[in-house]
Amino acid sequence: MSLKPDVDHSAEVDELLPVNMDLAVKHGKLAEAVEALMTLEKRCRLHNDWKSVDRVCVGIVQACWQTKDLQALNENVVVLCKRRGQSKTAQTKLVQEAMSYLDSLESEDACTELIKTLRNVTEGKIFVELERARLTKRLCAIKEKAGEIKDACDILNEVQIETVASMERREKSEYVLEQMRLLLEIGDFTRTNIISKKINRKVLADEAFEDVKITFNQYMVRYHDHKNNYMDIFRCMNSIYNTAIVKNDLERRTQVLKEASSFLVLAPHDNEQNDFLHRIKEDATLEKIPAYSQLYKYMTTKELIVWSAVDTQLKPDLFGTGAFGGADADRRWSVFKDRVTEYNICLLYTSDAADEEDSVDLGGRRIIKKKKKKKYYEWWCN
Image (cartoon, rainbow, N blue to C red; front, side, top):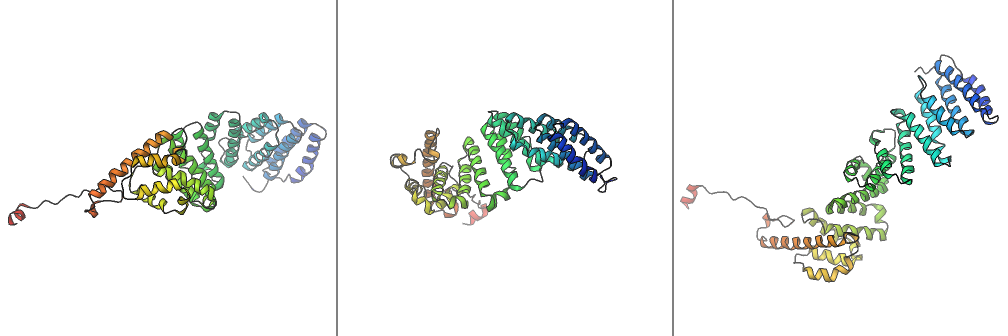
């Protein structure tokens, strides 16, 4: 499109736009005003006066809104966006103008109708992809409020938000979090894991996005909880625990550490788990949770754990907290018993191989080394 208009209609627009606005608003003749402005818009468009086209298009939308004729508003938005050779700027501005009315609409049905109209005219147009994404999110909120969670989830996850280049990092991250939340609500854990990969890890590492990091890890805890991935749950809880938001709140810090600690003892015994057991034990906050502090002394001391002692002494304080709360408490307590048995076996195996220091790793597993076979002549010489 040429930047310089063939004919400058700015003076004509300055004269006719206020006149037709008064005709529509004060005299109630919206149809006549819109018809006159549509004719003016066509002249401006044919003469490549795009700034005047923008003004006229927005003026038509404003006239419909000020006369409270929502049907005319929806119809004229569609007509203006579908006009041949319509400028991208004009379409963007009239869509943005119409979006500004959504908060003022009292009727939810009217709000939904306007959103659907705007989504219709923005479909497949990259230059208004940001506006379409925001409209979609708003429509999904209305559907969720009405109890249509499945529809809301399907509509929101149709948006490939990672391709919306004009959206800021925070808004994009929060959009992905909303997609994850709805998928979790309907129990679609496979798609939740796929969508979670759209979150930029640099964003999660940014201190300015710690609230996003916490929410993301809380959603991933729900995902891993469904899969019974206890070590992954601990990693998520540990990420939450290490944020400044949690560290600066003693009560919250203690609660998060309690939950993280309970899932760590449920994780299979390996080098990573063993390392984190010793790290958590050295955390000063753990001393504020006596039952877990005693548990970690058991799990990090090179002595066999007597299950009956744990079951009688620690169960009253541990049961009902962290991983040992909720509907899965009994099953997880049984898993914990298996982990204690695993720990004892590993400890015995390590002790049995103590004289072979180079043959035992941090997890207590023996490293088997192949012995070199002596050649026959060496044996004969000896």
